[in-house]
Amino acid sequence: MSATILDKIKAYKLEEVAADKARVPLSAVEEAARAADPVRPFGAALRVAQTTGYGLIAEVKKASPSKGLIRADFEPATLAQAYEAGGATCLSVLTDTPSFQGDKSYLVAARQATSLPALRKDFMYDTYQVAEARSLHADCILIIMASVSDAQAAELEDAAFAWGMDALIEVHDREELDRALALKSPLIGVNNRNLKTFETTLETTRELSKHVPTDRMLISESGLFTPADLADMASCGARSFLIGESLMRQADVTAATRTLLADPVAA
Ligand SMILES: O=C(O)c1ccccc1NCC(=O)[C@H](O)[C@H](O)COP(=O)(O)O
Image 1 (cartoon, protein in one colour):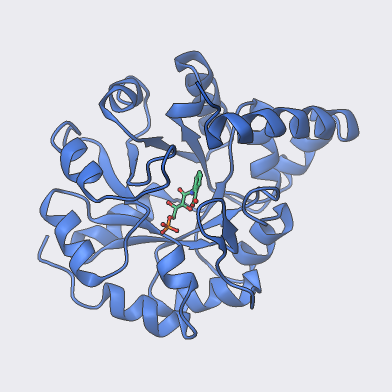
Image 2 (cartoon, rainbow, N blue to C red):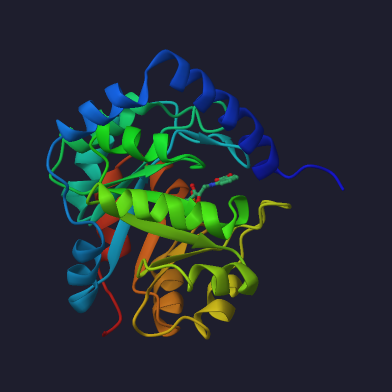
């Protein structure tokens, strides 16, 4: 069977982390994490936002494996401020370089330019990366169930909680969802992107929403473009969204964010 994009990313990410560990010892990363800005509540901010409107995790995303370069004019701090002015609840900042042209410094810059909680959007395998996320002032990490074992997921989640951060657990299908529900985090992200074909379909959230218990927060991720898409997802119980491309392609990011959030369906 041919390697998926996640297999390829995992291979270079493990090498990257090994190199980082050799360069900066864990003790130094932990010291930086302890000195980082206080954690901003991520899940709680979404919960508040979605009681009256929608929760939006707005992604600072320059490029992707599926779309190549998305935004040439890319200044993370300015984009983060534009998102905040448009009403975003949280930020997601890609720190992976080879596939997304992201950078660890983008997370620091974006978060420090706003008062929003920020997700470190990367491919996490090692608790070293979790401490590093906190040292970059992250408030939440991503755990992609398709790419980790149950034991690894639990270890990463425990590490996030120990640093006071939240963990967004990402799933693509029923099997991953069942594994995610064995974890503690209430934040369940259903990714509408098929990682083999890169196609997005909102049917993924529609289908999996039936199996997400009401004590978990369902967050629909990827392939969301219009207010009608958000209303569609809200009708099956997702009132928080992770959106990158559709907002990153707009000249006026603030106006586009406002328009997307302007007319939420009643909670
Ligand atoms: O975006 C990709 O092409 C991609 C490819 C392989 C693994 C992950 C990928 N994206 C990560 C994401 O989850 C999205 O950046 C995020 O959900 C926002 O999606 P979108 O609104 O469609 O940019």
